[in-house]
Length: 124
Image (tube, rainbow, N blue to C red; front, side, top):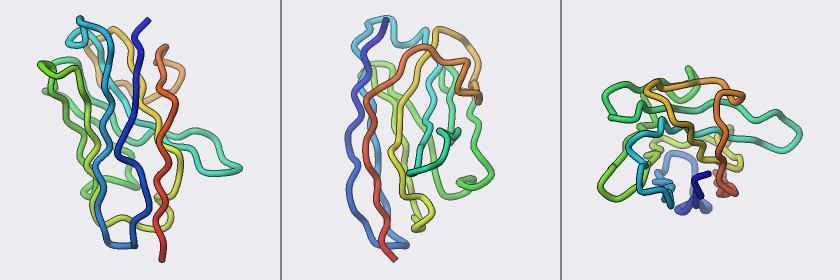
């Protein structure tokens, strides 16, 4: 099991930016595909972005494409989510997820390690 800790959440005005980080405890971090999901109150957890273990392949939800960028630094055991042009609809708890795989997976059920979540609130 890999331990995941998110950071970087907070309150921002619409149109602003935030960068989330997810630090992993596992020294074999480079063998894990990583993903970001989010969950707003009263809704199911939904896919946001994913990246393959080497960083060469990424995938995004249509709602964030062109605004969010996922990246990773395997030397630092960290994955990032750069969020630009934030909208009130982006308000949610954001979760980092991991699974030992080569693919940028987009389904929640494909991941078996989860962080505790980071709150992102976008005011209008």
